[in-house]
Length: 230
View 1 (spheres, rainbow, N blue to C red):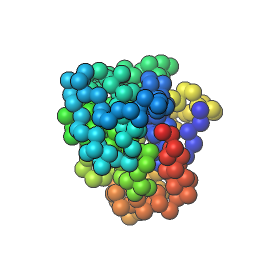
View 2: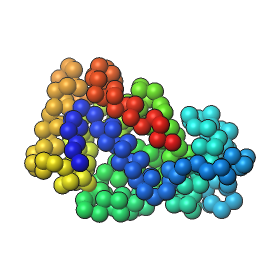
View 3: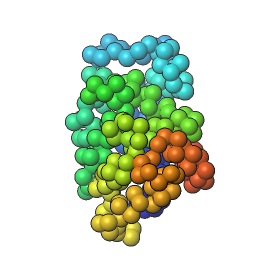
């Protein structure tokens, strides 16, 4: 699997891998005819009860039937209604047994754990998924920026971007062709900052990130790749 162009924006890589994992573990199953007969989410078997269906529908761009289908898949994999970081890492380790997905899973978990309480609720999951699959370009890019901004201080540093890039290479780099050199992540980071750091102050702000991405045709194309997944 090639990952050229990741120095511009790894958004497509993030979404593609995440969706692949969800499908592998049955969370993004096709909706069945049974879904249309349910009036509400099934709440009785979980310890954490998600917000009402109507409220989630208002917060996301999913229909009632899509939310019901997503919830069934989520509940099947996460009977308690919550996903902790260890479970998240375990899922990724099973999906990428030949690589080390621990760090990547950690960063992605933090991006979905909106309130930072150490657990992903169904609400967190479905709101994030709605942005990735059906959000506006601006919403998707803000989500990506939040992923890269590890310490959430409003800036992407070279150290943060390098950590993200290394985590992706650790997970899947050995499966790329041609085989990547050890200094490839650093090269990607340097190219990223040459393009994104408009005032060359050593950090990338959300405004710089948004402005540069929206002027790049390849990044804009990647934003549209996953809109019809479910």
